[in-house]
View: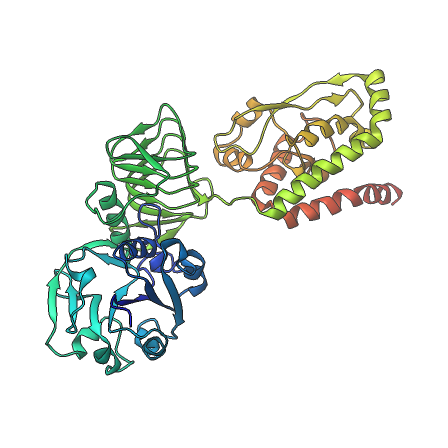
Length: 482
């Protein structure tokens, strides 16, 4: 048998007042899941064997932890039906991984271990209690004692069934993700170096005391940074923002202009809109959790809080397929293109490139042929748009292209939706209003069509617009005949 204890980690919990789609062991502290912090600490103590008991979203935990090879440890998994009765899996653990003593711990709570706890090899139990005299869920137990307990004992009641002959020590929590306040406080404590057991990700560097910035983060020169704070990888902090004190912004997040983040956690892939103050709160994508009130609030308006979704492989495939189709079509019509250029000439237009959270990032040119805005010539009139489409500045389906002034004159909420969309060669506004390309006609109606598209944009919606565009000549012909 191995002289070092085998660790039984109970990872069945759900964090109180937090997103129930995310099990408590996967809530992050310093942009790292707490279960990863626990494995790092224990592996450094030369503990090699881990048995992890799962219940809530087990596949998510296995995906993060895997087989433990990156820490040089061995990990086996067990599934229980009830999260409050995890000891039903102890029998197969005793059979498959025999050990003289077992260390029992909670995967959503990392205590400040007593000096001799990680190297304890006595045969009498050693239990760690919190300051309120409640059992922390951590302890060291001899095998024969665990073999004799009932498997129906609730998760935190084990200490009540082993008698009174055990060593007891009171400890403080190092990190905990059992509730929203504990998640936020744990993140703040790791910033202030209050917890020396754990560390921030290795990609973070400290340009000043207690200010941690990770690789790939973009911070506007006008942003005000107040220590302590942490900014994760690939984050973007826009102009006139105030970050800190006690601010944690996890990777792939964006804080828009004029917003303030103080004593708050911004979780991964979260967008915080303009001119907001996030204080004493956790933002999980479009969910806001104030630690004083506790109840999660779902924000439906994407321009306030939302999820930043990375493009899928299908998205990339369709994007490059669209550019390839545009190139082939341009080659096919190039003789007519040259003839129209010689006959009518160009009328150049400059439009704002989308998407853009701030509204205006860069401009692209879309020349039009000086052909009358008539349905028969509509496609050829816009055909120079194949060039920006090939370059990736334009999409086949999207909102109408607009100038700087047109965007600035939009109502605030329309502007936010519009700027998160993409400019299209084919637009819903064109189809709704009979392919009338005169920008002075039906301005409000065309804008409404664009906003409707921006609010409903998806691959399936683009497919419906494409089918409608392909059928539009037949519909037009049928309407004329009837």
